[in-house]
Image 1 (tube, rainbow, N blue to C red):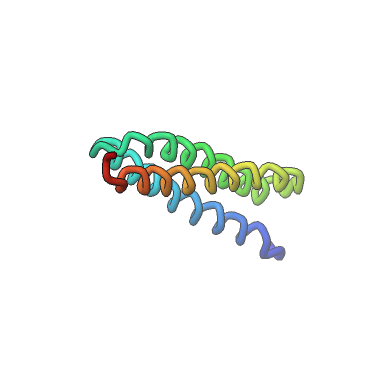
Image 2: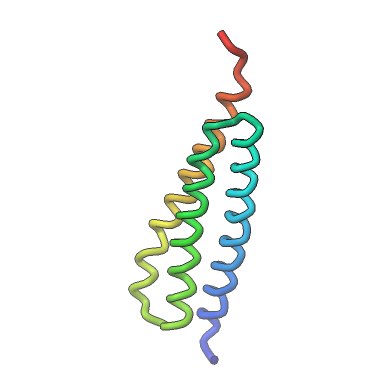
Length: 97
């Protein structure tokens, strides 16, 4: 393999997949401890990580560049997951009124 791009795509997909799988587990643990709003974050992490990493894997394996157009959809879902997790944490930390 003379082109270094497929290896970089595989590495990036693996790193992001692992990080967001762990984030999904952490969000589910938060749900079990009472932060119910973190549940959507877990699903966003799983969906976003699957789409983001999966499209990079397909891009590396097939070298069909159009798979790169799918990757940002997963990235947006991952960002939404982090936003939802932050919102859940802030709303949980607020004292009741």
